[in-house]
Length: 445
Image (cartoon, rainbow, N blue to C red):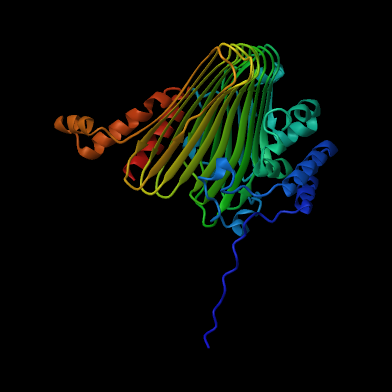
């Protein structure tokens, strides 16, 4: 008889317990209100099933191959420093100055800078745990109470119970942050991290912030379960750039939502390059009359990556405008999904809502799905949507080759041109160059 060694069954869900939540809160020496908030979220998490194919927004995204027994272990600092972060990511965004810099390595703050000018103006830019202790009134009122909520789904509830680190930005009424703020969340170890971004702009204030997510090469499965909350007050102006380049063993599940007040403006840019699988909810709530929200997304999937972007533009007030443009490419055996929805509430007249998904298919085995949608409950609106798919134009490739340009270079030039419209929306030249390098590396393999 031959003995056969059985492989342990793969976990269908992470195996966290309430004790993990309590231990995390105790280790952070958190105030009672935050501990109670985590425990309430944990109760919601336990009552929710894991999402699956029967859920409309999940039926095209299969994450069952994740090895939770590897991925669920919370990443903890182990001596890594700012020296672990790639030099290009550390470069100042504009010139040699910036308003503030906050760098996390494996969830620990390893560098923190804020200009004296911003401190004098009353701007708060710090890590979320510090903010929860020192600015309870601001954090408690806004942390997962107005934008992303624990009730939004299984992963949102898990995040609310176990978030490990995060950034908090508060700009007081009438203050303008002229120099950009930069946040870097970088992991050197495999496992789970749960980062949070909470941005609060009071009335008639202004800021620009870039958040970089990245990790070193890994050997086992990892998971990032994140949340982003952007609260833009009346007549405020926020430019928010988020760039993701996790390693190929990381699975991302994130909820991101903005609320935009009366006559306020949000310019939101999203870049997705890394991870094995990314499932992102990206939502703009236009809450005030005259609110304006623009979302620009770019992504490039290769090998066997799967990117699923689920976007929502909700017009909750009249005379509001939303404009969404996602451009993506896929090659090899990768797959991408974009699901978009524009929704106008009843009696919310004279709104303008636009969404477009442009997709570049670069190999016969890649698959890209674009699913635009409208849900209109008012009769004086201008809303449109579109999704297009194509390959590199053979005539354009031939034209460039006829001028002595090798085919590979011609295809690279055309692919770069496809993304250039979105690259130009990023307000930092060095970041645009970094993204071009990442695109070139994917295009040429």
